[in-house]
Image 1 (cartoon, rainbow, N blue to C red):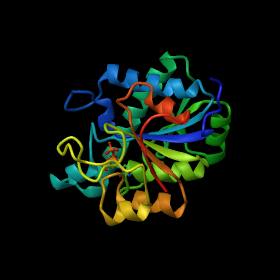
Image 2: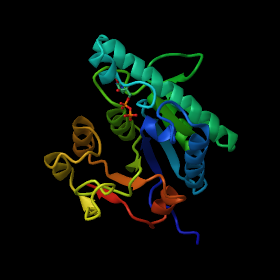
Image 3: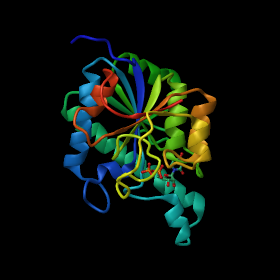
Length: 238
Ligand code: UDP
């Protein structure tokens, strides 16, 4: 049917690990292409799409610092990892004929646009997928906080967290068959119960800005598009 999608502008957050497939490290091009196709299906609905991709498949600042590296340097390396992931996603989306921009919080003008809020909004209006790279540009933050920040700046109607499970459970559904999925849950409950959805500062930011969060499975083919059309299972955090 021709029903209008439930959201006009969304943020899709995925971890870097979502791009590594069954590899233990780095990028698995068929997996990147599969996720790009999920994004394409939503783009075809006319939805304006922002993306933030983590860097954990390549480098995590905390790991580096645990191995003796200076923390802020290690965090900058993590931010650079997100730029590589963003470029891989850009390439896969453009192969599907979708116009994109990689917009970096750290200047590297030969590789990506610098972040200029009004310019990014204009790209969205022109239906270009904006991939925000480099996290927030600050050490000690995560790409979850970057997703929360950019989603608010871009006036997204919700953040979609693409995971390997179809929502937030009261315990790990991969190990506990009795685990129960929440249809809805509050930010405060997520924080209180220490449910692993986003890191605590990102959850606080989405709560304070009243940004709805939708946790869904990216492994379900067509799942992202389905939710935008009011179908499927997910958890909504409000
Ligand atoms: N990072 C950072 N500031 C940011 C975003 C990311 O310092 O605003 C660094 C941090 O070291 C982090 C790494 O980049 O470990 C990769 O990001 P993240 O861990 O969020 O990736 P994900 O877990 O989503 O793959």
